[in-house]
Image (cartoon, rainbow, N blue to C red):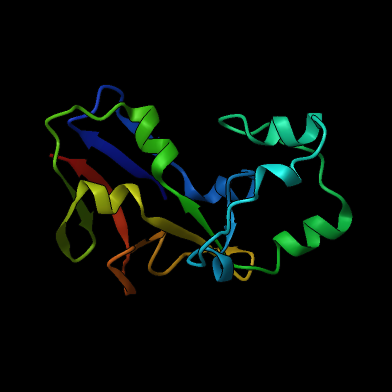
Length: 154
């Protein structure tokens, strides 16, 4: 299943959460909502090509070891949606996003959408029943939006 991103965007997108398991931007679900402490400048390391490549947008995929592949197939992951919204180039007058789901529509503020995380894999498997992804908004982490079919920017 796919999710379409349409409306007040310059470039409409088709999102396929089933391939995000291979994306280096994915985040472990248990770490997704924790605060990350910034690293002080004094602790910076000498320039490292692998670190530089991982900071590129989108990051360059590195080869996975057997252990990393096994870990990818056992954990739950979320994907920050902000990079996709930047790629779609949202128009400046847009203020809301409407989630079209199997059961109806739900409108959220655009700022909430930009800070949201999309759960796409549970225990290393794609979400089938209520998928293809669940949207965890910063303001409603206990009640994600499920069975998303379309995101319409308005």
